[in-house]
Image (cartoon, rainbow, N blue to C red):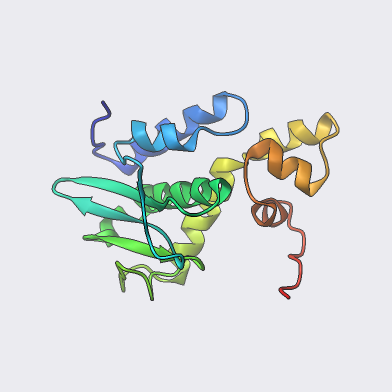
Length: 170
């Protein structure tokens, strides 16, 4: 059983160990090792997940009704909050589909768009480490769909990681 970590630095060092494996990053196992659960829950469709305080520990909750790639990104995003924003979380923070605390079941005025961007950036880098991306491209995996499948992420996450334009919303 994982123990609750005392410092964000310890959590980041554990996360880095998961890059010593092969894709895809085992993000659910990482959350477990960090002592965060993760916990699947029946959440409203507009809520992706949250990190919340339960007694003296933290718990990462994700929407069990969302696609697996969305769940993986949500868990990675909440790990980012745990590592970088723990001092701002107080009782926690919820995230909508747009990863905004406003409109979630656990709004947190301390978590601004900047912290949400940081958690998103952490999540994309956790799930698609640059050296793994370069290695995949070196063996000929270059199509966005193929790369997304290889890393078990959404095509949107892969397009952002590759700095490609997102398709226009219909």
